[in-house]
Amino acid sequence: MANGRLTARAAPHPLAAVARERGLAPDALALAAILARPWAGVVLSGAASVEQLHSNLTATGVGWDAELDERLAVLAEEPETYWATRGSLKWQ
Image 1: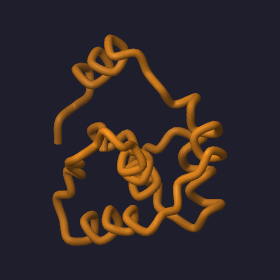
Image 2: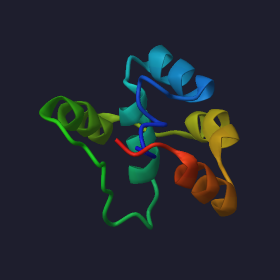
Image 3: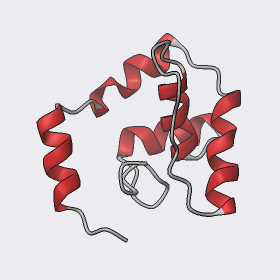
């Protein structure tokens, strides 16, 4: 979950807003995005608690569509930006 950046406590506004509209937690929506990709044979959630695992597992029931792709495309990051941001985060 990108070191917590895609969870309810820190989800970027576009992800949080769409998740709220669809009655989902941001982590489930983020995982659904990955699961919708045909090249993603294995998806690691990083769940560290039973509660997180239960939330993550709801991603398997999310119907992904072109509207979600379009609305959440603004969240894409260049690899360099992702790794620089991740490297600056406090590990918990």
